[in-house]
Length: 467
Image 1 (cartoon, rainbow, N blue to C red):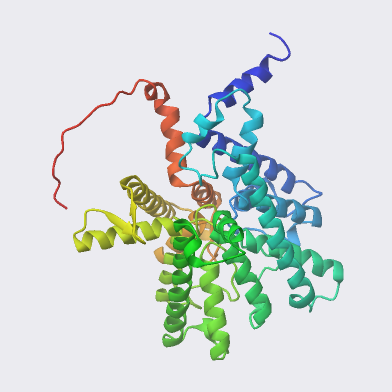
Image 2 (cartoon, helix red, strand yellow):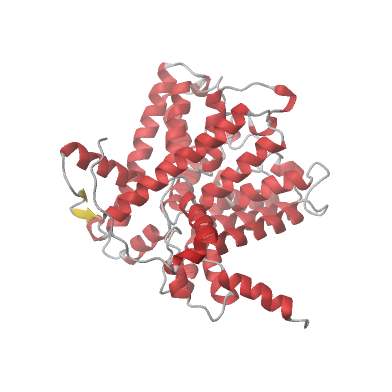
């Protein structure tokens, strides 16, 4: 055995991985390294052990925002900077980064062929991975920088220490654009609840991050003669669906919490209620920032159900958020409309949508829903709470959706879970960020790889099924 043999063995191992498997392995490695760094004395205090670092690292790389430590108090400035880099890695697209790295790690392989197997990814493009990655990075750097500058000069002006204000502006701009929800304040943005500027900046950062680089790039390409009609169908649907969800969600949340007289709108005037409803609706779409504590005592059951729906739908493909994605939602709605009208084909904006896309949307939705229900069932049927505290199934389901959709809304349950309960959330965050179809594709390739090349074109007779 030569000295270089283990290296070649490891390289051969990577070459045999499919794109979904490569992405999962790379994500696990990044989480492992993040755990080691965050648990080190130079990155955190004695309150942060291996488990706390593991939970935080997973939440960071999946840009979720759920945490069992106080980021601003328990992490040193180095730990906070490292956490910000993890947010960038996860938010810019763990799948885009791993695809980019794969071109260097797995040399000599047919990358174009391997990427064709990765259709469960966000599909960052086969022909120009380097250009795409640079485009994503430049877009993110520009938007984050502008957000940080506005927060520093006009938003966080109550922070007198200029160095502290600068770092908080940069960190929160990174966290907002990446839809992460991490805050250096334990109360999130409660102290800026009545600040229109701070709320507006966070809302814009969250929306721009959630739209996805494709939409931003499409708008930038057509910037000289910007017209809604010139945008691609993908961009039109993403913008239209995002606007619709925010509008309906804000109105719905405003009405339910006002009529039911919940504590969420206590001591706020009409305009402040509108702003708070808008902020919470945008935050529910995978961002996780809140300007008021969320619990059963502060928000009505109807309001929680509305937030859960928005969380489950999430952001858009190629964006920094999670959920089943806006395009999946609109595809399902279009298919439902066609079924109710008795139409054979699914039409969106005078365009025929293929059966493959509809089947994929159904698979994502059903798979995600079943996975979330499984998480909630495990929390409710096993002893997962410290000191045997009791929580309602609504609270458990809300937390599971928050983890799976990488939102980060905490209803007060996360820190009350024991290690097994928190591990369920860790699995949910990881699977939710990568995507349920990518996970199933990786498992399928591992179990049935030997059969893939032996498959033949087999036809089956048709049969009717009454539904």
